[in-house]
Length: 257
Image 1 (cartoon, rainbow, N blue to C red):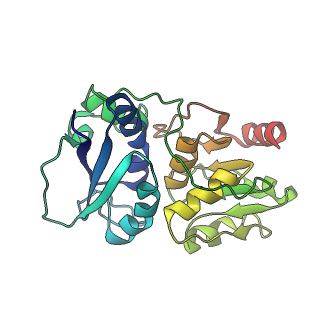
Image 2 (cartoon, rainbow, N blue to C red):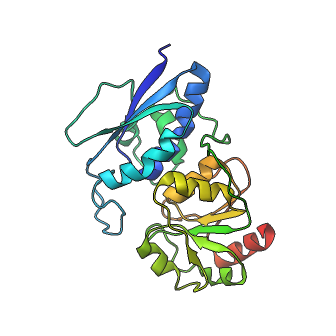
């Protein structure tokens, strides 16, 4: 077995974080590390203008945002950007699931790579994202993007709780703060800073997003607003909850806080 395996992935960001389930397990079993090539500029086919990277799977800004978190993982040796048109011979093309898995709105994102390559058998209950520091746990973190929303969910219920912070873009925060004018915007410069903040919170609440994928891979206490039309994020391991209605959400908050 080689000391390193070379893999490539073109995004999206959350899919890339979920790939760590497979890579971590593989590296543990085979005593190796990952050289991770990330492709820039591969068309996504999205027509939704609310997607944070537009009509591509990964762009330069998102690569720069993710790279510090990936490089901090003990089983990742190197993270390398492949610009549009560049190719690299790799051991595993982690985009293969997009060609072979026909219904990406169903199933579990964390299993998609295992569906394409049976060498990868991830333990989805196991933490596979590791953070170098902890900043305490006396706060709640919320994230909600402009996609995968149930528009009937009422987040004003969070007003009665102290130390609630929102992580996400300025646009996302402005939209969310309509629900809670006391909430504070926790701005981060990269995904490692986001992960450190999430790792330290007493509860994470979010939709199907990059931020939730980080919470999921950290296995912290987390609550998912699951999108009923594409429920392909399925929490496993640690303490987790999912909701589809306001009553479910209130019950979970009363139980966890």
